[in-house]
Image (cartoon, rainbow, N blue to C red; front, side, top):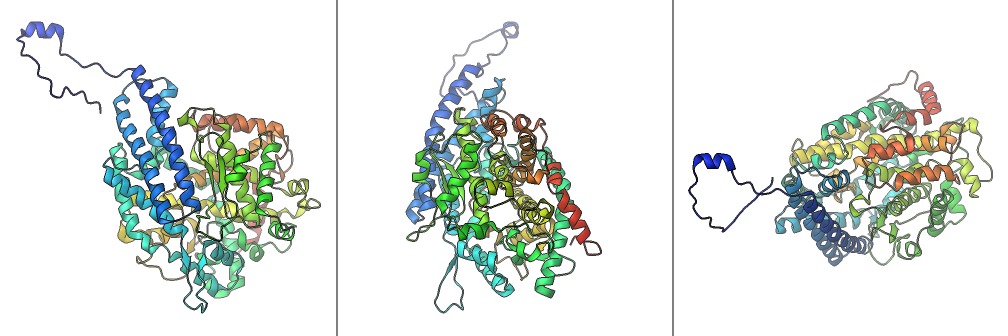
Length: 607
């Protein structure tokens, strides 16, 4: 709403005839001009660019050295950046009805829509909100489970618990550490309730109905259309997930007996991951009897004593083989690759672009595992994307949408085929293509198993932000959604004294999650298009674009656009189509789908 105020001005009384007034008309203050809008945006980009760097530096220190002081400093930096962004976003409403050039108009939209956290305009509430997020993230990073029966009093951190979830086949131990980790979250519950209230207030001050609506508005389409698009994509892939779920349930029942129902949801703690979000850690339990994929990459890495630095160097070489420049020396000097022994850090893997130019970093507590080998490719995908669009204006230095950013590294990971592993010296010879069901099963346990989880995190938050789910039903709604989408159950009683959503990093840290679902759709669509550009004529799951400059050129052209164009245009750069399409997933896993159908004959399907 535009306000034109002449506060404190005393106008002289002038008597004018009605006829004269009709001829002249009322005096209307001049509206804002395009030139004024451009000047305003120039100021915004300079100011927010500087504040963003300060905030990133403070946040890096907080994440790699957790103390009360670093949490406070990071909160203050985030508060300054958020408050300035919010203030500019509100001032920008004066230009809402002005017809602007396309690039300038997009910047004004991104000014509001790129906010993950809309802080209230009130300074005290803004500071309170940013402090709450910093405290919740810090509590997650410092989270430990101290088993009461452990005579030595040894507490387990997230990495140690994850290792147990990966390796143990003792259901009692798995349930114990599963409950133990989820026990870190209840103290966050009250903070999260307050966070929702303040976050919604900030979103409403920008004209959105709530924070969830604000998040959904950033995808270059109306929020309701975007919700419908997610439903369409999920329906495309749901049959494959249901088939995988039925097969895995039957195999786990063979292993664990009656604690796994013949028909119904799978106990979440038996799926090899604290959140049942990926299932590749139980591959040995569900691997096809007659189709061994032919190698264990984790064992290969351990046997070769591959250190974290070499794992990252391998990931970098993938990108340079496509024609990208090597990472800058500062990347190797400033990144965190190993978990320190003398202080707390947030081990959750992440990629950083400190100065929006060349100060690129990753933060990981790397272990010699296949999972971390893949995650490294994923995080470096962020870094190479960040560098590709560094020449764009400040507001365009981002992915076409957040799903694009997540998809790039994962697209590269799909090229980690047996042939690729031979080329880089990790395998002596390619595995037999006739036994690819094992390879496809391993990928499906990671990618297909993830899809419903990728949806439900934000489905829960959107309901919380809108008020459809009240604080009295936080945990109940969480498990209803996990049952609906994943077909999993906790395996032990959960009540509203628990706060199981808080045991997943992205909830206390306020990181939107739909991006990961979109990424898993897009990565296969990207992979299919890039494999075609690379001239691959074999099965899609055997295609690798490693060392193919033509595929690299096609990808780089899209990456350099950043957020300067709607994501539909960026998608078309690689795929030739502006529409997301999950049929590439069905093509990739077609041999597995056929095999699953045979295995599931006569067995219960669904839950």
